[in-house]
Image (cartoon, rainbow, N blue to C red; front, side):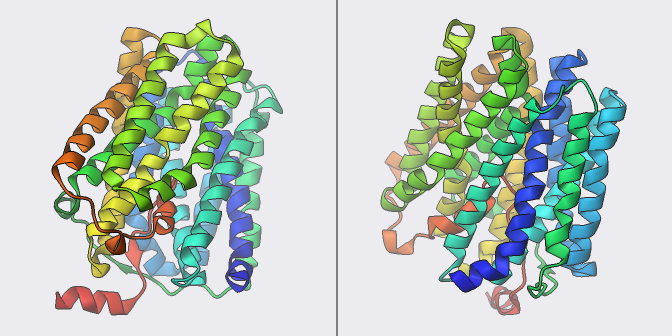
Length: 417
């Protein structure tokens, strides 16, 4: 494991810097949009445009890597992504922001593809789960730290956009100077969404639902917190509390799903997330800010692990040669949900006010709990010895899943089946 970490250390350091900038940008954009008096629907559309670009970037990332390799793609996407915040800070126009967030989503999706494939090249079957658990922990932690950088400057000014650009640019240095061997160029695989639902309707529905709720959280929760508390600074603390909750609960809930029927675990945490959301709706501005932050952490601790456990559930039923197709299909389902989520949540907010964000998420989570719970009661659980290690499913938390396979032996196996 020490040897694996040594090979991946430069890349992980670059990831930490990159995602700190991403965390800051993720909260800065909706906060600044609210200060510019953009409508809630407009803010939701801007958030959806990011995930639209993200989805397309994940689908095209493999082709880019096959063409020019990991280092060049990482350098190009980092350069492009670092320029976007500067333009955002110069012109506060909703149409321009929608285009720029689309491009940012595309860039970061391709960057995630580069990062995760590179980590896969550094690991083997004995170390991959632990390496990716470290990667996910770093991801969630630095995103939270990046969100707290909101307190450095006034979001109405240009400084925070400049800080974001600097962090994204600095991430390039450790990666291009890394002594680790660059992974071989990938072989692109095709999507098959029908196969996902054949493997696990519960897992597929959970992936889409996670996209709906998580996408709306990233796009609109900063607006919710600032409007409910009347304090812009609270937005950063609130989003950070949700991310920290997700980081803390990711691993124990995953281990629980290794020991019990994953469908029952999914139904349980979806129910918990739905109840937590309704508590936030009814509590709202009636409770102290600290209590609101704790509720946000509870919601995040239940909502964010949904996707990773769903990935493990579907891989329980997949053949070895299907893992790549499954990963790319799950990413597409999540991305489609994340595109629709902010738009739908914004419409609900228009009817119910700021708490409509959690009216929407609770409706999704409670519906998912009923659906998955019914299927868990109807079908026997997967035997433990047939299950995939939850650690491998962590690769998809908050990021893109790997959308291609570099092992040619797997490709030959797929052709022979």
